[in-house]
Amino acid sequence: MPNSRFYSNVAQQTTLSGSISSGATTINVSATVGFPPSTPYTLALDYGAATEELVSVTAVAGTTLTVTRGYGGTSAQSHSVGAVVRHVYDATDATDFRTHEAATAAVHGVAGTLVGTSDTQTLSNKTLTSPVINGAALSGTFTGNPTFSGTVTASGTLTSSGASLTGTWAGSPAFSGNLTFSGAPNFTGTMQSTLAAATTVAQASIVSADTFDRYRRFADGKQEWGPGNAARDTNLYRSAADTLATDDSLSVGGSFSATGDISAGTTNWTAFTPSYLATSVSTGTNVGWYKKIGKIVFVEIYTAWTGTGSGSTGVQVNLPSLPYRNGGAGANTTRQVLHGWIDNVGGVNMANGVVFAPIFAGDTDTRTGTIRSYDAGSFQNQNIQNGTILTLQGWYREA
Image (tube, rainbow, N blue to C red; front, top):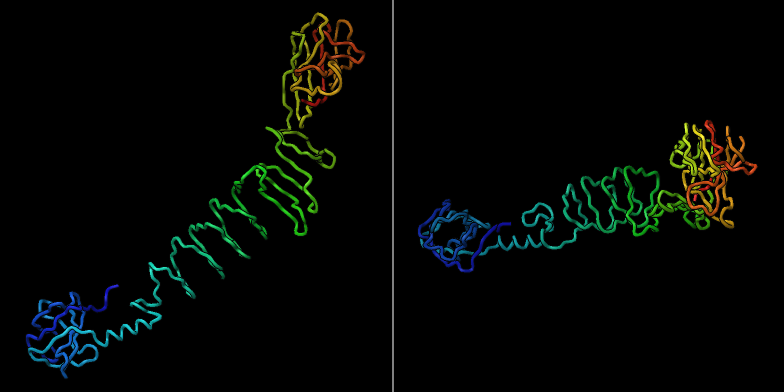
């Protein structure tokens, strides 16, 4: 802020070079050596005499000075040539300083209490109306109903006791620690948690009287449930690629049953073409379907041959997946069985009727054992006639 008046410690005393009347607004002096280079400043005319008058110099042109007469409570008077002229510090200056020291408002010409722009200050009992705050660090307690608009960036730790948040939070806010939501918060868009490890808890819920979380969801998607008064005892998780598992019982409709279709991934059967080992007899219709529930595979095979086979090699069929064969003793022991029906067979050791396809331990691929009748006759190449029809249906456990 510019100075209100100017001073000099080296101003030399001078004299009027011409007389002036009490109404003159310019004076001529013999010299201005050491006078302040800027205006306004104060001069005393007839310094020390009974007719002393203070004037305020407002402009300088050489030794001609433009002045305000009767300054500082003195009276404008006529002065003769040769009257002593001196640069002075007067009572008005001293009074201004004392007034400034005592001021609590409107100091330095500013309306209201002055807030500096460089020094560190603590403001108390201030009301800010429409302020623009850039880069501030806010701490303490905010009461009332503050409204934040525009883009608000909050860093560090925000602590709120009993605050009510309303409106829409856009962007990607990141929350850490334990968040407590009451009422019915509505979240839209994607809520993403970036956590330290797969076993870090991403979400948990508890009833007010509980001593344990009733539900937990971990960073890897694993979920756990419990009664609330004891440790969680039920889970559901991804155990391998394309596999959802639980270490506990799973009940659908009360006893692993359902009124609708039970399937994994789709309610439709998947078609496949059966292939037979030990025969190359041509077929007219050769179709198969399967669907899987976990490790259980339901399968149906229908084949109608249009050629005639020969030889006693047993006929085997490939299944849509590798069946389970472990457990028990030795190779060639039956582990699983598919049942079916055969019509229009020829040759020996085989008759129309019920058949079964055994799945033996010791085999290593998707094939069954030789298809057999219930009287132990084996289905051989020589039994295939033009018009022989085989149907197999049932389920097996895959490996």
